[in-house]
Image 1 (cartoon, one colour):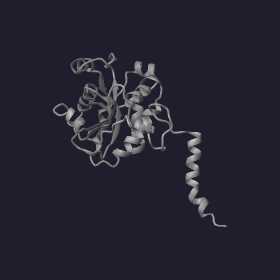
Image 2: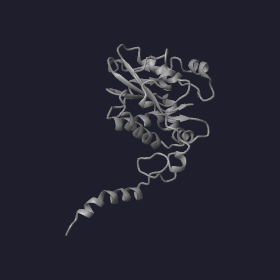
Image 3: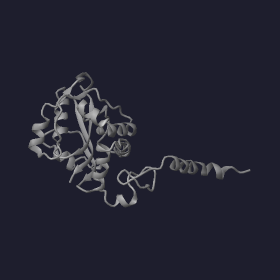
Length: 238
C-alpha cells in the first residue's frame, strides 16, 4: 500500500488540528487570521501600516535620534495613529492583560530582523524596565513580553537584570517632549556594567513617541564604555 499520500498530507492535517485546539486570533479584534503566522485578520490588515524600516539602515527611527544617541540600527514595526488597529492591539497588551500579544509581535518582528543586514551580532536584548510598583500593578512588563518574542526568533538572550527603573514616573501619555524629558530624568540605573562593556545591546520598547524614555535608557547604558546600542519598538507615532 502506497503511504506517500498520507505522509505528504500529514503536516497539513497536524496544522489543522493545531488550529482547532489553538486558533490563531487577530491581536486587534480577536477574529480568525488567514494563516498561523499572521498577526491581524484580513479586515484589520487593511488598517495596519508596516514601516519596513528594518530594511533601511537610515530611516525615520534613526533620524529621530540623530544628534541625541549614536545608534547602530533602529526600527519600528508599525506606524501608530489614534483609533488604529495597532493602537487597539497595544491597549490590549498594556492594559487588558493580553501579554501574549507582545510575545507574538516579537516573534514576528524578530523573524524579519533576523534577515536584516543592520541588526547583526547582537549580544543582549534589554526591555525598557518598569518600576516594580507599576509591574506589580500590571502583572508584567509589556516591553519584556515583546523582548521574549524577539529573543525566540533572534536566538539572543533577554536580560532584565542589567537596567532597572529606580524612579516611579507618572504616566507619559499626555505629556509633550520637554515634559517627558523632565519626567524621565534619572529614572534608570545601570546595575550590571560588567555585562554591557564591549557588547551590542538591542534596547526595546512598545512605542516610540518623543523618544525620551529610550534616550534615557541608552544614556544610562552608555555610562559604560564601548557599548553599542540598537533599538526597536512595536510602533512609532506617525
